[in-house]
Length: 77
Image 1 (cartoon, rainbow, N blue to C red):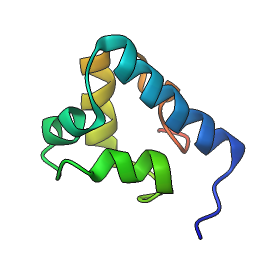
Image 2 (image 1 turned 90 degrees about the vertical axis):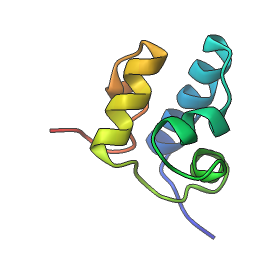
Image 3 (image 1 turned 90 degrees about the horizontal axis):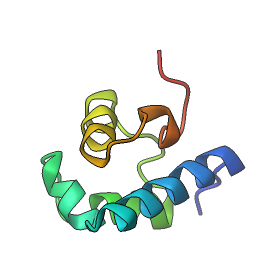
Image 4 (image 1 turned 135 degrees about the vertical axis):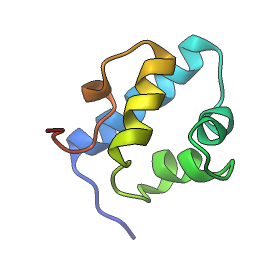
C-alpha cells in the first residue's frame, strides 16, 4: 500500500475537483498528456505515480485554468 502525505492527497483531491468543475474526466486529461486512460485515475485513487512529471503537470493545469502548484504533489522549481 502506498503511503501519501496529507498534502499529496489534497493535491489529488484538487485535481479531481478541478476536472469535475471543468466538465472533463480524468481519462480525458490522461489522453491530453499522452498517457493511457487510467493513468490519472490511478494517480488520484492509488497514489501511483506518486508525482506527475513537470510537463504533464503544467499541461493539465493550463487546460484546467489553474496554477500547477494547486495539483502538484511536490514543490515545483
